[in-house]
Image 1 (cartoon, rainbow, N blue to C red):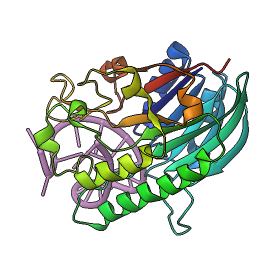
Image 2 (spheres, rainbow, N blue to C red):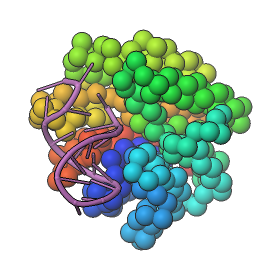
Image 3 (spheres, rainbow, N blue to C red):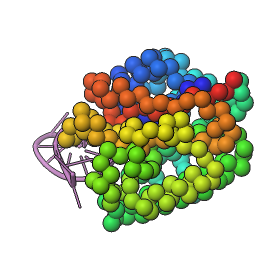
Image 4 (cartoon, rainbow, N blue to C red):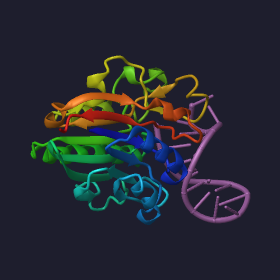
Length: 261
DNA sequence: ATGCCGGGCGAAGCCCGA
């Protein structure tokens, strides 16, 4: 079972690319981020026509996350628990049944956090702590769980073309790495890292300054697995080719293959 | 490059992303 995550940077602007990719790569589940649209503006028909069920948690102009699944959802919940006052649409979670049993998937758009001397960075750190608390709860279910998304976290120097240029950035500072490590330390497996030991493989290239032709990228899109999901992990890859398409997102899909029977 | 591109909003130019 192929499960992917992709920050599409506007589902409206990216619809042709997303449809092409879905048809070509046939993911069973696709977690999308940065839809930049309200629920009613999501292109439901075009995606349903390719055989997907859709769970959308949208927002006007900013953020917005979705899960597409060839199998129907059993349950869907919008928003990350832990702060009722948080109105940013950055988390949607769904459970579904597979031949190999129950599976739970979340589509995550973790806050960027820049500039670091502002409330935006505090929000990022607080959001990461909320995510860790919620993950603790989900792990008590002892079922296959995939926390997939744009984490806006550069985990180590292997994952950035120019580490010194990113040193003080919200994506790469020690406090960010510590929070991410606390999440992983709950017992989660970083699937791409588990399958690919070599570095300099990226999921984001800035639109500016020739970042893409120079391969000046960062790896910030991750799929974290519960032990029950990690046991079923076969492989993980990056669909780098979509960055070379017309009107690309600045992110590309990262996916895993899970043996769900 | 603390925004050089790209998208939203909305109809010019600002806000935002990483």
